[in-house]
View (cartoon, rainbow, N blue to C red):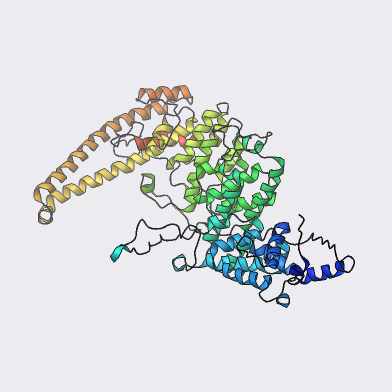
Length: 594
């Protein structure tokens, strides 16, 4: 751009222009042409400088003050060339805008245009320090205008006399008020700001929240779910151009390095989304390992749908990246989540009593659910399925319903497995730790090996023995209470209510006795048949049908029973007592054959 200007207004304000004009004026006083190629801010900024030299009124704003300050330094517009020169005026204005959050953000954004000179003049560092102080301050103590907060007001103010209203009270400010503003910064400046607030003692959770917000704003692939249920798995990868691919990959790797380290600081689902995006963008191996370790440290906080990471590329065996989940699970096992005390599973837990969910138990449930999701994949090999399931220790599963469901689905999706492979697979579960619903289903499941079915029936018999013994114990106590402690009960409670309650318990006990008598007869007959059993599936099914077993091949779902009726009768598949003693005859013989 060409400017036709007078010499005197320029040389009277700028030391550089005075020297250049003096050199050129000696050669040709009538014609003086200056070429300014390196002036900060370019022609737009020089136009404002020329107006200042001519005395034209010029408005300083947060958007032009940084470039004007750098240009004034370049042109040496100091106080030696006039009082109130451009350097001193721009410095005063910068000090004013540092008191305002929004203006400081705008000034920092404009530093990108003149970054080297803005760094030399410490404008960038002063902007970042100003923003860091405000971001770390208590939101309830704000004394500076913030973007969005001054415009958000309560519906109305209290009316004072003569029609004058009080000022509306601003709404309370949350701790994440600054996330949106700083997300507009380019990553190098944003990174410096995050490091500055970290040095000032900001909580790691707030820093992580800001980084998550920034990542969602600048990594569009984070919002896309690459899944086999909603389209082609290669669609996200094909949607990225080669040029933006490199930029997105570099940005993702930088964001991963910037995330604070600590268990639970960053949400697990966000870390898994970052991991999935890193696979799509083909990020570095160190970046993916970093994310896998972070997820592994807090795997108990993950959700099943987030672990379903599709395999990327074309030369893959399974639909989902099972190897990645295996590595994450291995990292979790290395972290000491649980104490080394010996964990026991009590009968009360097997009967459905509540038990605390430790991190290891939550991960066990998560892995069982994941195995159930990937089990139908025909390309999933038995060793890989066993390797993932065997990582979870036995004590981590109070009940084995989840792993039983996964095994059942795997058997259904892989009908070509041999008997030895089926038995090897079923060793992953403990038949003694199946719930009533799961045991009933397993006893009628044709996909299970015969010896597993026998084990299930045997443990059902032991469980029935414990249950019946408890009923007899209650019956004896109720009879003694009715005979010897009736008067005390009448003193403390209403007589009619207590009598009715006792009578109902006695009726229930009588019904149980009749039911036990029937089961003893049925068990005696079953004992004779089992002794003659030929170890073939057909013979076993014939016996089950004879004793009213209805064989079902439907896949077991532990959640299905929760939606049914609450009043259920004990299944006839339980092995009862024989003459009040344990039935260890044929069942024990079967287990010994195993």
